[in-house]
Length: 131
Picture 1 (cartoon, one colour):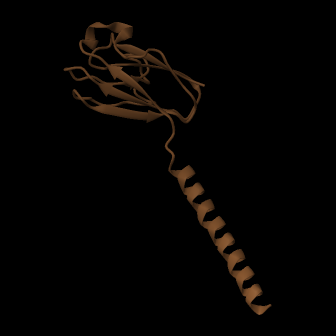
Picture 2 (cartoon, helix red, strand yellow):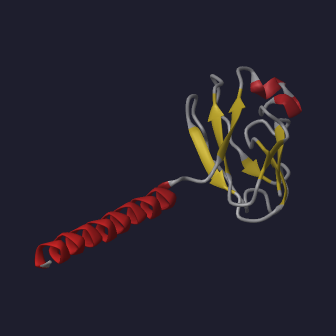
Picture 3 (cartoon, one colour):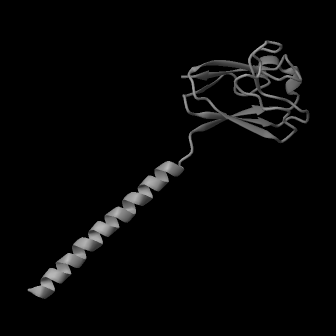
């Protein structure tokens, strides 16, 4: 009888330990999952493309999701919030100068419509819709 109690105790302890270990892995996996990020590219010759200089345009994301802008052009560009020349331009996000091949990431914490532009080529405009 004593042996049976020991075996049952070991089995129960093993099950509890296994449950704790796997539940910790699940929590770690959930915490390590990055938020969703959508891509916007700046194509070749973007400076001449107006509202098609950022693709896709507009782009829709949810609160807490991000956008990665990629400069696939041979010229420098920016992704700067607001209208070109506005007093609040760049107050929400500003990539700074993006050399060819550079990227810029921004996570949107608040719902709204975010217009943006390139400070080097103000005719380049885009919109991020956040819901």
